[in-house]
Image (cartoon, rainbow, N blue to C red; front, side, top):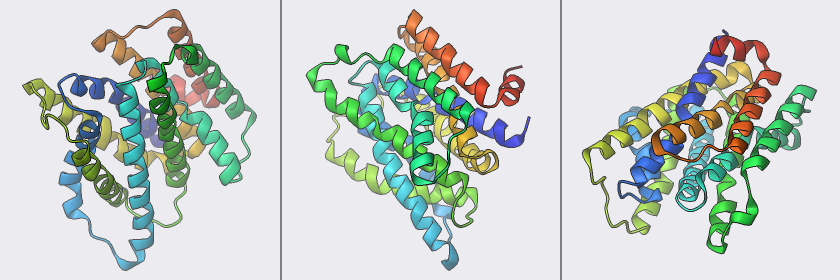
Length: 287
């Protein structure tokens, strides 16, 4: 398997653990603002002290800082939606980003979609429609639902830029600049939220935080920065849809979330979308 595809698929599996880990931590007493902050705080404490930039890197570093700020707000909206609206629907909103990425690439970057990528996107839309049922929403769920769409939009923009950045910057430096943007946004928001508790109520809660920050955030982000430039935006987007399958399976096995027939069919359609876009890579990955 091409190393870029391996990096992206491994990153997708790690990112797919985020909904499960976030729900586990929130069930231990923490609010979405703190969960989002802790997701990035531990890697920031490890990596940011080593941030050293040359003058020629400042412009690119500022771009990564801006992406970090946007991603911090988007992830907060997503984690908040997980605590308010049906979990499967929040997950499908977030993992609609391959479709959003296709639209972003076409409208902003002039990348005309291929026939296979359009078919893959349509399969993802059908999959989402099987799970997403607007008639079940209550009035207080409208804003969390709408704000959840910010996450796939920001991630789609990130995919396209990181696949072909304007200026070179080492992957770890990109992560450090992005983490700085996360902290600038999330620390004030966590304080403003006035949480009743700042730490998990059980010892296992600390383990979930470490897993969220390491296995589901830092490692996948690093692999993403390595893989995206090698495989391009379209392959990155479609392969990343594997996150949705991982998220739903983990939620079912660990949290007891419902996995009905519609959700199962939707997962199969997602896998079909991945197979259509790059069949050789997927077959190799799962064999």
